[in-house]
Length: 91
Image (cartoon, rainbow, N blue to C red; front, side, top):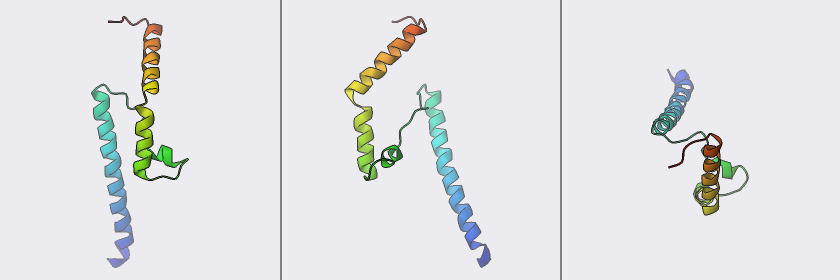
């Protein structure tokens, strides 16, 4: 039994990781069904790849960038442009 402990431990880790991934995938699917576009999500790791910072600092960077007035305006301009290109009727 003791010889199997490393395998059992690894299995528990794998199951925990699968559960976390499953929860994330379920959450994404729930949001998708509710009409949210979730195929382009940002993660603190995107900041960590290039900068030394805490998770909190990385989240602050993402929050600042993704709620920036200019960025939000450019997204709205792009939505309008794509809608016009598809000949969608505006309200």
